[in-house]
Amino acid sequence: MWYVLNAKDKKDTLELRLKHRPEHLARLELLIQKGRLLVAGAYPAIDSIDPGPNGFLGSLIIAEFDSIDEAQNWADEEPFLRYGIYESIDVKPFRKSLP
Image 1 (cartoon, rainbow, N blue to C red):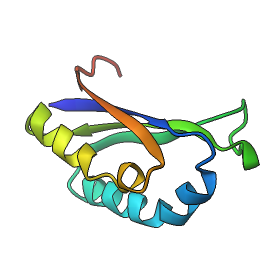
Image 2 (image 1 turned 180 degrees about the vertical axis):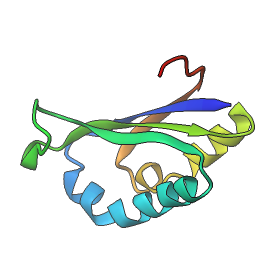
Image 3 (image 1 turned 60 degrees about the horizontal axis):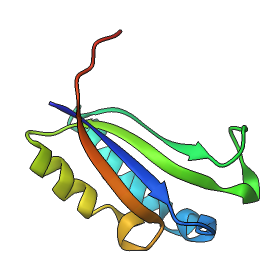
Image 4 (image 1 turned 90 degrees about the vertical axis):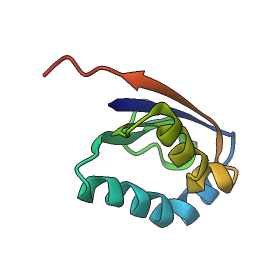
């Protein structure tokens, strides 16, 4: 089943985010290789694809897991959470309807 992982950034964590981004992307790449990632991306803090020093408000990941517990366990190991970039990650089941 698909799950939405909606993460909220702590304030003033852009430098940490950039530092730990390779580790974050490596985990997402593993999901891609397994065909389990639908979409992932960040919420810019301003209306711009590149928010510069304004940073980000959080991230959205929609990925396939066997259960909500597996999705939550995966989220709990997220580097951005472990390194204090994310304040929280909300995990919810998701039923894709379109397209």
